[in-house]
Image (cartoon, rainbow, N blue to C red):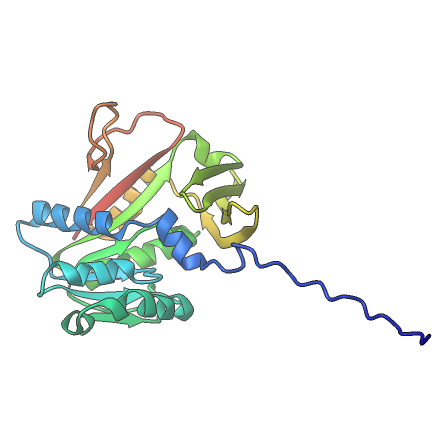
Length: 275
């Protein structure tokens, strides 16, 4: 009888839901609603300026989903998306822009540049959503960005931003939301009250218990709503409006102009800065 050296069996790694998931797709499903965003800025611009907007610039555009949505609304609409992450813009081109009609594709331009210096003059609307501008931690840098946005606007243009706050904003905490096929986890990992430094992550969890840890990482400053308004006005904007959901339980979920947001655990607001 021959002695045969048995080879160890190779363990085949079991494929998990996390390993086959697309983090950009998960982000859009969990966080972003381009249709609602465009609805708001389109309607509010017309309400503020008495005309329809044509030219939209999406700063920190990521996958440029909002740009793609904008050019589908009217044949006269044009969009520019600006971001430093060429990989996510390439993903967005494949996912969103490639599905547009030929004429719509011609009205979208994506630029891999820094929003602090990128020049696209004559924009009716400029967007800085998903709290992306919080990456600017110094007041001087934030002011530089706001001044560049002002420069890029048309004579009656409007700069739209968003902001969140509330007592929960200052806590180290995790919030889990069931999206259906996966769970979205918002992780506020640390906050420094001295500097305002705010470290957050997005994780995704799946029914097979697999996870994508730190799918997205955010090293921000937690800016307050009064600070943002002050810097906008110091940068040269003529007026600043704040929008939030009404506090009444029976009220609609639409954002409406407000002059007060009551103390709460968490709130989200839109800001419109008028040139």
